[in-house]
Image 1 (cartoon, each protein chain N blue to C red):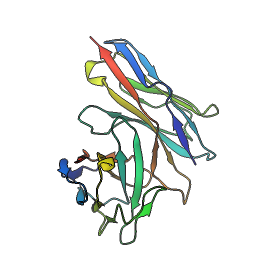
Image 2 (cartoon, rainbow over the protein chains, first blue to last red):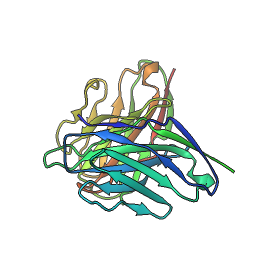
Image 3 (cartoon, chains in turn green, red):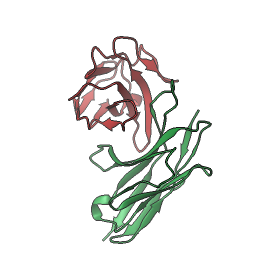
Image 4 (spheres, rainbow over the protein chains, first blue to last red):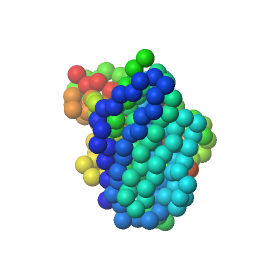
Length: 117
Length: 113
């Protein structure tokens, strides 16, 4: 079974600075997706960024980028120019892409990000 | 991306009663899932809602406690049966197409007294 580990329960960053959230995962599959979701206090789960395992290029979405290290099974999220609205719980998630495999999401425990003005 | 509406958004229920949560998607989707998020915790998958057949439950979750329906490709319900205070959680519906990101409803905050 796949597992996702987020080793940082809480992180803080100054507004306009850069912060990196860590995520590692364990799987025996070679083809899969990885995601970062954001959950503000409103509890809405918002997709931040997505990475396909077969792609070597790291995904980027505006101020958000990932460092995907497939061999190390590491998938960190970098937030540049942090804004107050970035404050939220951030969840790393794994999803199988194997044919016949479940496409359910497996989540890490989350990292609470605080942005200080 | 699919827009997912979930209702009720919150409810306070008495021990021993049941609550049915509805999840409506604005377009047909191949996959629908139900998650539970206990206070201060991550999301745990309850089951995969299968259209026209019985749901597939994860370890620790049973149909008698969490019956799920999915009559078509846009709608699903989750019932929390014979509730106890331990069932107090946020319940989230997620949906999407094969190979595409899953999106989530706003969740239902359930409090059992």
